[in-house]
Length: 149
Image (tube, rainbow, N blue to C red; front, side, top):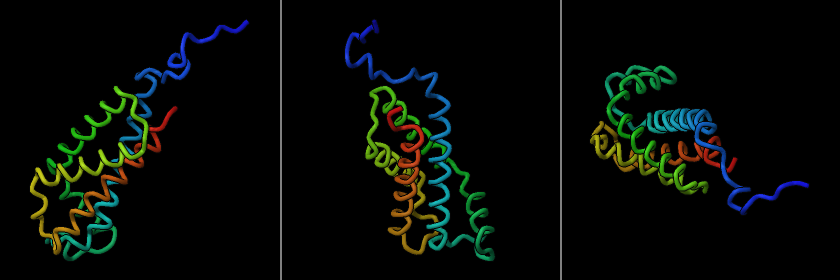
């Protein structure tokens, strides 16, 4: 005779964090890659950066990535890590949480680092690009690591 779980919580308990850690790392890497890709590809027309001026296509994107390695990425990583820890601790699994957390993390980091004055033609369009990149990064993370397993 099969033994029944003590409660519904026991039957639906998620795997321990040690089993989820690789999935979280892959999800985070893919979410960050998607956010960076969107941020550079969509925002490339808004930048007036001398390094990018004489380049086009993939060369311009790589130039943007090379100059984009600034403390804003570190601030974003810390904010996203906090959001992931909170989600894991409270077992938050709905999509909107990850999308909002990603968008807010990227926009907050950009604001904190003063990236609104980075030479954009239209600063509001650049803020929309930041938010879109964060929302997409959060959605990609949710697809890989945030859903119920």
